[in-house]
Image (cartoon, rainbow, N blue to C red; front, side, top):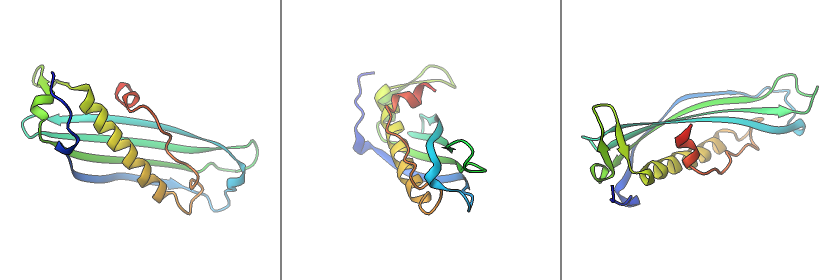
Length: 148
């Protein structure tokens, strides 16, 4: 596959928040937050015939407070779905069989980057006014999402 990923040919056509759970106890003291723990999951599904790509992105976050301070940790669990139309998808993917595609690594990386950074912004706004207000989804190499 020698086709190039052309950002202008990638279109976000749908977005949904499937799950949005937060636990931010009223008596939680953010002064005792030692760190944050986060885990992310990223999945891709494709329709070569329709030039469509669906991504599922899940993130779980929890505070880690200094020992013997907060009775309960603050936490959040979000699941986002992004659907993209990729105009030149047929040039960037090759069907191996009915259920498997060989995808140009640049496309997968571009979609992971878009999904991850957009989700970071959504979470930052959702966490305002909560015990998770200081959490920012860390900057990572999007290729790491693809190997999980």
